[in-house]
Length: 520
Image (cartoon, rainbow, N blue to C red; front, top):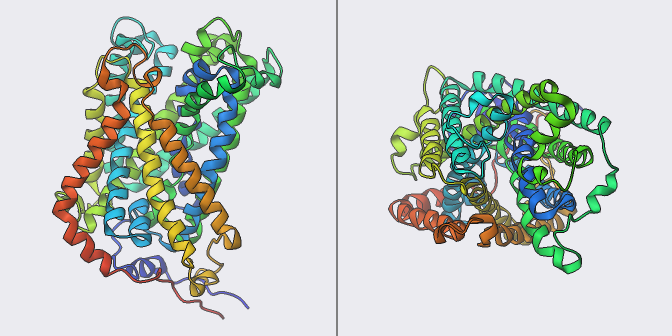
């Protein structure tokens, strides 16, 4: 028995089964899909950006937040892979949630994800401040201290971040092919850079792997639980965005099979590479007690161990990874805006859902996400707490959006999802859809418990995270104010589009449409 090859427009016919005419260009293959997820996670960007934060709160033992967060997020990724095989549609978080629950929950999942992605673009872009001044002092355009925790460093971070966002916006509106080439090239360089950094740091190790059991004087026994939970922000920020392969489903060839694999592969690669990067940095650091590791982080380790020239060459690779990470997040955000606008449930939907006939991409959504991210930076110019505040709120928002998928999925699973006719189905391209089978319920429960726990952990208004200088009361409660404000604004917008969203929901098929199997 063999399966025939799919007709040229099989993916288009599949999309029509969901009620959408193909508009975006399918030019993304397996590696480019993997690159989309991996570059969003971007361990070179986020580990370099947040290593100092994690170390300052938890000491070397903060390393253990990495495998714990990775394990929890892998449970989430497994559920997402199952959904990606059944609903290969752009704007996946919104599309999955509204199909698993109802119009209201689905709409808010999309809205929260849009706000989260805009904030995450801003948070990724300011990571340039961590590396560029270390490469060349001329990148410190604002005179003074280059540290992100200083006023001059935070101001310079806004300038560099805004310039980067302008560049990624231009690339995004130029077409998915250019975006894919830039993204895939950047990811290849990032993977090479991660391997090089890990090997070089291990060869310059000052201490053994047992360093990961040292709390660095931050606490012991139950007294270490608090610092450990705070330091988990570092790992939680890194291990997100693996769903980007699903966001680009309508531009991916054979997405029912490609997206589930690349979601899991991107997260697995990031998990292994990031863990090695953390332990290599701790083993190679010149000192664990001089305070520099808690303020300067991994750039300090690289330049001190590999010399200025070698360290700066690798930091250039980190800068490339930051740029590609920002590009990938903005791309994913633009597709979410496009997907909701196509359903006519966003303000100015008529303009936001237009796809350029020349580039085959939704131009205005890319511009909106770029302007929104730049605005998040500009309103905080000169604010030293910008770094941790933006980082924290974008994580909280992402976790809320993820929970608005995993919780409805759990409810549906308890009612028998996936349906019997969906479990063993194969598409025209051959091969069964990805399925968790009998492990689905256990994995789903773990994903929900982990996600809700991390929402409370990361959203808790700790002054040492949101306002370490004690400068402003509103920074102390920034996470609650930001999330509350985003939900309130979303509520007002939803009142305008509630009838339309509910009408659209009622027209959805009961189960995911599936292309019938063809057997030669």
